[in-house]
Image 1 (tube, helix red, strand yellow):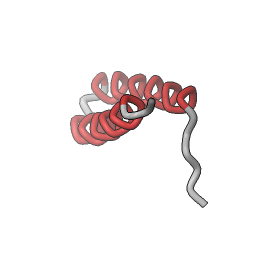
Image 2 (tube, one colour):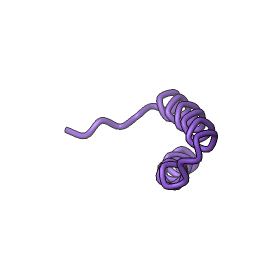
Image 3 (tube, rainbow, N blue to C red):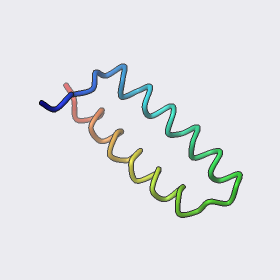
Image 4 (tube, rainbow, N blue to C red):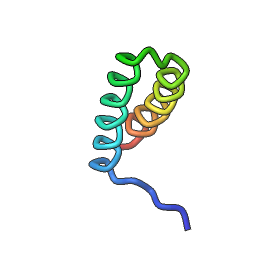
Length: 51
């Protein structure tokens, strides 16, 4: 059974991922930044699509 995140869980995940992007950028981990930003886009898209 697939768990669907609540709006609050999605917002928390987005905040955590944004923090990870900042840290990865600071360490010069460009591939990590790209991967996390892709995930962020997916999370934001999912949140925006909700009624």
